[in-house]
Length: 360
Image (cartoon, rainbow, N blue to C red; front, side, top):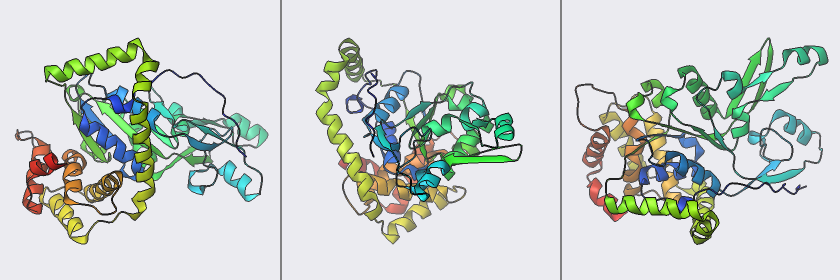
């Protein structure tokens, strides 16, 4: 039984459709929304290049989701994999479940966050005195079925990054204390951003992010002026600016919803899968995560384009984003890792990468 959502005035968010440039970042985020199993995005780039603006714009673009009313975990009313244990028990007992709709949650993880703030805490005294599992949900509970954004992720404590990546990979968060264990669904798109000047993530952690987008400050003066003017128009009249892009936003939202529905039907030829693995082997990529993510990202891109078959051009557009951060770093090597991936792709697939990008 749907419960009407309480109207809460929201601050206007810069529309995703109005963002100029930064195509790598936008594509990576859209593909992760279509298939969250890709494993999130690490965005590395200069300060002031619109990382936070783009991520908030993406969350605002997505359609509202149906959730169980008064549930701190944004539980899905019918999908057991996205339900908290309490909701599952109520469903199993045949109790009526009240539902409501809400915006896709977008959770910012502050740099100084503790593990308790991220994972949640168990009130041991209440548990012992009253015999109930008193759990105070953390940011992972709030982010379920949404986006968890960590700015300056390369400055975050490695242990916390590990916790986030484990939850993102498994889809569950488990909190244990004094023999009491509580778990809840934690399905979210993990987005990390950082400035390379402030240090890189350890390779073991970097490899756990599905995709890696590099963004640079725009050098073209004409494009810079366009970006500044767009932002000025939004700041002066947010509602008018949003109305101007409403049609584009609705069209992009419909395209994402259609892609999510189409994704299970998308196939990729055996020969193309062989070639992807050949590229990974030639680049000496550790493990099979690179192969898996490239396959998933190519399928998500085909779905976004409204097709059920993956083309070489799809693989060409995602393979650098999926593999560049998995290459072993050689401090004496000046060659860019993205260039290296592109060069091996061209050799294995026998096509010109630049020509494919131009055609796309």
